[in-house]
Length: 149
Image (cartoon, rainbow, N blue to C red):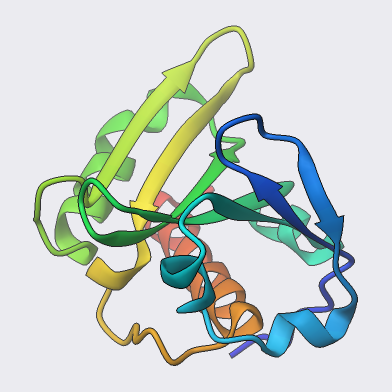
């Protein structure tokens, strides 16, 4: 698994999307369950290594409507890869209500993905925020291999 060097970690308000506080790297070792305990927040993460997998940032949150941990991010792939992306998500994300969505934004020129990380085999909520980011990195890298870009 790739060891990421997270550069930006921010706790943000779901309601306003404002930054509550910028966190130090020590916060990356906090269990992802933090989000379940603080449902009014999401965590915004930036990492230069994300560019290797065609994303620039990730927002992690706990979706209380579906009771799932989700990762939201933009994936810089052309619209023509729609079938391959959807096929990969269907094969690799357990199908439950709210488990994944993929929509192409022509205005942004990227795929807006919302993936329930706890619907991916191998996830558990004792993982740290950093481990979840590394887990997601691996998942997206595999997607890119499948799409063959």
